[in-house]
Length: 403
Length: 228
Image (cartoon, rainbow over all chains, first blue to last red; front, side):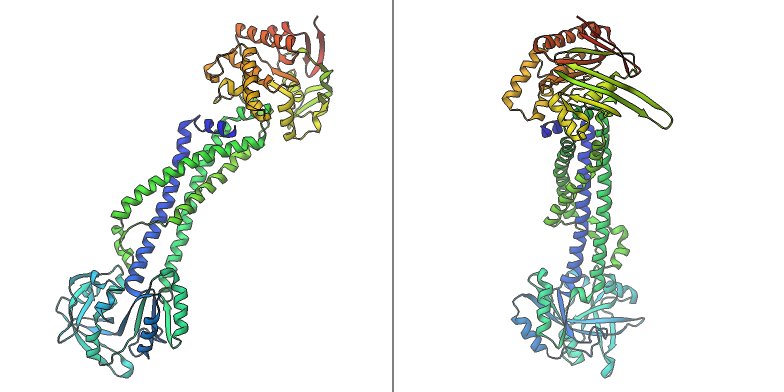
């Protein structure tokens, strides 16, 4: 009976009902789309920084990171580390890198550099340096090491393909230096990295520095979600080395993501608040317009509980129609923007400084759909409490008089 | 047997500066099967008295008994259920549920009472016939004339088989022909089925049909006349 009257009441004022349905749908779409944007940028960031660069976890000699990537702190026993990593089936891939920090000098300028000695064949499993090359290439050096330089550094130092760079560093045990030739430029989403990092073949670096050092292992696990537990196990197996997760290595990124989560929560609260006001306003109008009728219902014997249930039923119907409409809107827009991306190139400079891509491809976790549906339903029901309270306060004798 | 009995019933409305005795010490007995009109000018307290007898309003002082039950002992929620089981209401402006058909409007109170589908259907058809609106059960209120809506309202008031029916100015919004038809129906129901009616009115057409006329002036009964 409540359902029957409630259903008919919903369609009594179609325009108003459509407003509530669209409020729910748009609120839901806004929540999901913003969440998708946030999650998409998180996944991209993770992909750029973690999957393409840091790996899920890294192993260094103790003090290497604290000493700001000092060349003089290599891993003591790389063979043992390799053996442990090879035996661990949870590891999908790993690479060995050597790192040489120092000063790069061209004919005209000088700049701080962090030279990464990498094995390009190994790196393909972890990073995508080759995909970031915008000019030239990184062939293996013949006489002098080939350098892959960030475009930002190249612009700062006015470097061209073929330019020579003298790189000096390793001051603890006497200065080491080598001369490399620029063979290519890369451009990553992270401008800070582009100004600092230079890539060179590890074999070339070993040849020049004659140390055969390994400073860094970058690891990718089969399952990203098991990262913490697998890293903890590696820490136990390699007590003499420093095993760190990407989050420990770059806490500013992890913190940034936490801040983004807080921003996301605030935005969601604003969306739900706006939705709530829309529902309260519309349902209150609906209740006030029917004051006389609701008074009559009480007079002839309909309990307050049943009348309030009817009001809640009406909101539930509107919400249940609004939710699939919102889902449809979200799916359509996610299909489109998930494919073409959201172009933020207007703010490219600012975004790149923080290491973000200027095109964001929104993505939504399936659990987020359920979370938002749940939130919309809760917000709708809570928003009905105020109009329902007005009903509870009605006195039939006064309500009937308002005809 | 008395269906309604009031003793020294009072209702005082107060605001910051004014105190109005809308009903001032009314003692009244309505016996089963009566067809009684409460008359008086506007503001004389007719509607207030009926509201208290119908359990819609709480007296400031005095007692109201319906079927021997003292209404002031009930809470607001208990009163709603009491009204459902014992009192039928006919309002001046019909007050039908606009989204329901005439059939559903009559059926509504029986749904609230939890009656079976079969019982509801039989009773609604019987009442539609009693108010002369067979075949109009599928119409919504907006598709019926004022007189027809008020007849549906009477049928709805009867649907719960109440102890008596309160009708507040039932003909006030009706033309002469519709008013006469409605009064014919109510009179017939009263005479043939012994249903007790209590009206508030200042419509002479209703007063002429009443078998008892109680005159209220400034909240006080000034005349109580039984017409043979």
